[in-house]
Structure formats: structure tokens, C-alpha cells
Length: 237
Length: 284
Image (tube, rainbow over all chains, first blue to last red):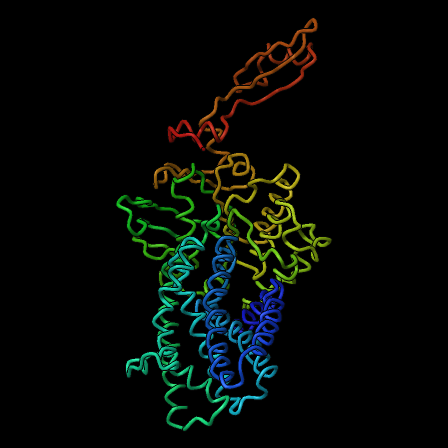
């Protein structure tokens, strides 16, 4: 009940702060951009876009919102209610995943039509966005300023873009199989070609395991670095 | 309602202790004030009592339960208003209250009724960014009351308020006390403490120097004398009298009979002066 309340409020918060409006512009930009991409490269570029977009959305915006909430002292009011850290984190991850899913579908429908495997395409977007959102929250909890957050979030996110090297045939490594984003790439490619069951299960498993691991880390970071400061009146005071 | 024994606390990575063995108890329905200068440890004590800081030593029992063993459900039973009234600024007063209300699973107050009680009904549909400090403070008070709390923790409840709004806030706090709510106030505003608190604790350097009722303190520490100001030949004259057997003091009776008296004051001590006398510290 609390999770759904917090989720609904986060969606309204993002709407009120113009996130959905911004994403309409972003989608329009991608749509125009895709017109200039040669037909033979369209699938590759589209996978890259749908890979990077939820990652960037979760990574940058989630951290930005937490910094905003912290500076405004919202946590002082929020964490003297019965809301659990778990519920707060799930609401944030869920609301960003929804926005990512909507924007990915809009871009895809406008440029490439309906994905061949809508479910695995959607699962790839949702699980990648929630992973990046939770990673971002874990990082931002340790940062005092927007600059340190931007820098540190890139450091933490860097290893997770390595599978793109394999995707673009720059450098292959079996180690990429251990990274969640390898699963993301396979699920996103299912928009254009059928994914075999083994790959499908592997992708869901690796993304789920990483989602759980980063959730545990984000929760601990949050409890250690943010909740300890509840009652201090926000960073700006 | 609240029972604290030998409470000690150190912040992580800090060598010195912030609290050095506090002992106090607060019965149900009392307004208890923690008075002290900034950095004395009153906010730390409040954060422990509301369950934010749990790595304390000693015992802190609230409503019969040790605080370090409580979970988030503890917040179903208490209300907390910190000094700075923080809300989602792009949402209206009513939207904010509705959000916070949705986070409680127990019985809650109707947000619109709460807004009416604090004279904010007309501002219900205004964004928080459009509210004045006084309005935000009252909204903050409403937020703390949403879950019908048994204990109310208020941090500097009259801070930054003009006299009219400060009076309104004090009346609201007294109404809650009359309804049986236990109220714990942390403040360095002696006047507010004097008017509101049944008992106060003076806290300095993480130690409680004294706990008593403001009235008892003022009587005990003050002089049992009165000061009379009267006018004679156009001049204001002041004269002091002992309160002892004042009804038989011929000089006093003659003075008030024969002269136009302008003021009469008993010379009990002010709470601020008592604080300075006892702790040797200013309240800033």
C-alpha cells in the first residue's frame, strides 16, 4: 500500500517537474535522428539508443531527484513516517522504469514499429532502468554535491557499459557475461530477432541477480548516509 | 510515557561524546521542554527519542518499548515536526498532506479538517512554494498530527514566527495537551518554554543540569518582593516591598491608597536568567 502510494506520488512528482515533457522532446529528437541513420545501421543504433536511454535516465535523474529532496529537507518529513527504505527505493526504481519503458516504446514505435518480442524488449528496459536507478541512489547517498555525484556515477557506471564493446565487435570477452548489461543487450536485440530460451533465461537471471545486489547496496548506503542525517534540516541549511 | 536512563551517545567518527548519561521521565499528557544552547545535545536527544539514532548506550523506553528495538511502525504512534518546515514545493498544501497521510496504515485525520484547525483552509490549494514561513510552520504542525499521535515531538515550534502566529501555535500545542497528547519540545526560546511547558530540562554540554517546572524555578530562584511604580508630582517613583505579610505593610497600603499606581510587579526570576545562573551559559 505504502509502496504503491509512494510510486504514484513519484510518477506525479516527475510529471509535475516536467520529466515527461522533457522525454517527449527527447523522443522527438531520437525520431528525427533515426531518419538520418542508414537503413543497414538502424537496428544497431536503435539498440544503442534503447540501451543508453534508460541507463542515463535512471543514473542521472534518480540521483538528481535524491539530491533535490535532500537539499529541500524532504527526507526529514518523509522518514518520520512509517515508510520503509525498501518501499522508498522500490517506488523510485519503479517510477523511473515506467518512464523509461514509455519512452523506449514511443521511440521504437515511431522509428521501427512494434518489437518482435514485446515482452523481452520491455523486460530489458525495465530491469536495466531499475538497476541504473538503484545504482544511482547508492552513489548519490555518498555524495554531498551535484559535481561529485556526476563524477562518481560515471565511475560506477563505466564497467556496465563494457558489453557494448562486444556488441560493436571491438573487444570480445567471456567476462562480459557476468555483467547485467550483457543481458540487457540480448533482451533489446529481441526486438529484431527471436531470442533462444537459454539466452532469454540467462538475461533475466543476470539482470535480476544484479538488481537484487544493487538494491541491497543502495539500501545500505541510504540507511548509513541519508537516514543518519534526518532532522538536520537539509544540506542547504 | 518516556523513560530515559543513563543515556549516552557518540556520533560515528567523533572522539567526544555528545550525551553524557541523561536521566529523565515524562508522564503522559505533559508538555516537557528541552532547553539549551545550540550544540548542547537537545536535538541529538530528540533524534534518539524519535528512533533516528539507535546506536546509543543506556536505556530509552517510549510507550514501554526500548527504542533501539523498534521499527518504522513506531512512527504510526508519534508525530514529529522539525524546525524547518520541508515539503514538496511544487505540490499544494493539501496534496502534501494527502501524500504523507497515505503512508500511515492506522487511523488518520482528515487533512482538510487539520488545515481548518490551523486557519489554512484557504491556502489548501496553494503550492507550498507560495506559502509564508508562518503558514509552512502551521502546515508542518498539521503533518505531524496526521496520524493522531500519542506523542508529539516539536523542534523550535515558534521559530521565525511573528507574535500572532507564535501565539496561535502555542494555543494549538496547548489544545493537544488538553486532548491527552504528550508533547516534547526542544527550544532555546525561553518565553515559549515558560508559557507552554509543565516541566523543563536545562541541557548543556550533553548533560541535564536541572529538571523542574518553570513556575517552581521562577519562584525558588526569584526574590519574594514586589516593585511598585507610582506617580508623584508628575514624577515616576519606584519602591520595593517584601511579599511577606504584604497585607499588613502600612507603607505599602498607604502608597496604593494615596498615589496613582502605574505598575505592580512581583520580582520572580525570568527563566532565561535562571538558565544563565544555573548553567553559567548563554542560550545562544
